Image 1 (cartoon, one colour):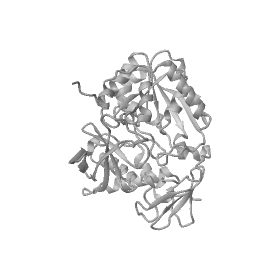
Image 2 (tube, one colour):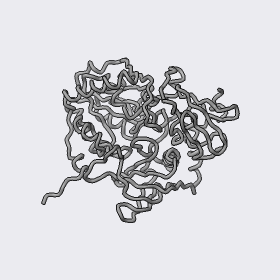
Image 3 (cartoon, rainbow, N blue to C red):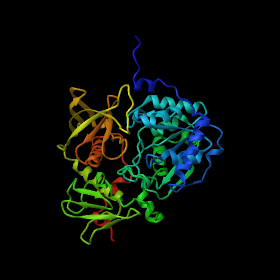
Image 4 (tube, rainbow, N blue to C red):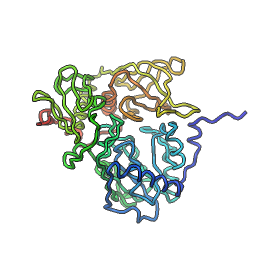
Length: 439
């Protein structure tokens, strides 16, 4: 009897092609009617990719989980094959659309030859591919450095590269709160590389240009744009998942965001968040950074200092999730819970000791092979690939922001290849007194 293929085997057995014209244009226009006006989306061209007759690649900053709307519409009637997280193909409400539109799966933050092969196949067939080089939608409202291998792929393909620059996308759909907040989103389309430029530039030079082209901090942008976003009275909802450290007393995991207010349960330090995402101190004694992104970076600076201790460890009880073998995930689940145990980060790497599908297991990922984590939806859980297998970890506390910072900075401290931005040290070492709001 022939053995039934798993979902993973089916996914990687496909040879992808350009999206079907009728279906792509139909869905794009439905999405345009449903979302573009409602979300206040506008775009401008500094170079028009619609004049291209051959293949090209689109790169974009990854502002939010709905970036396919922002990047797809300006390129119509051209069709784009998108690259999306491998694990998203196991979610029932996404799988059919992804399959029909020939979306290319990518295992984030690990080498994935299937993804590279299919991108090259599409380009050679005359198609166009959209890539988000950061590998994951923005966590803080600003960029992560581009993933390893992005420049190498662009150089290998050797076709024109266009860039979409999205402003306001994160403030519409933040990483810490899944509620939609209507305001304005602006997209600029420009040409980034010609084939000749890609051929002559080094991979490091391409990476530097990519960083600059997709650089965006939505909070800084809105200090000038002054777009009001409708948070329905809950602008600070779940903000503690990212802003877990109190800038006044230094306590961790004591911040709580609810309604329009984020406050420390230990010392009372806090702020209200208005429609522009300004942080307004509750009183003159409060110590509040000038923006959530600055606050996030100050936490990173604390983590970078902490991991210098050779005995540093981070540990928590977690539930363990994995992707199903044969049946799609339902009701927007991102994995199925298969066990629980202790997750530990130290200078050697990430360790999990606990249960998995009824057995006791030990999992380990060396820190140099662990640049960061993926986050499927919001900032309540993290995932990574260990020996090419997807594992998702659900902690008991609101500590994901700290796990993210400590892991990334530990990776860098131990000589990992995924480096931070060249100006990161300047940004993170800024004195706290100059980073607080004078409101």
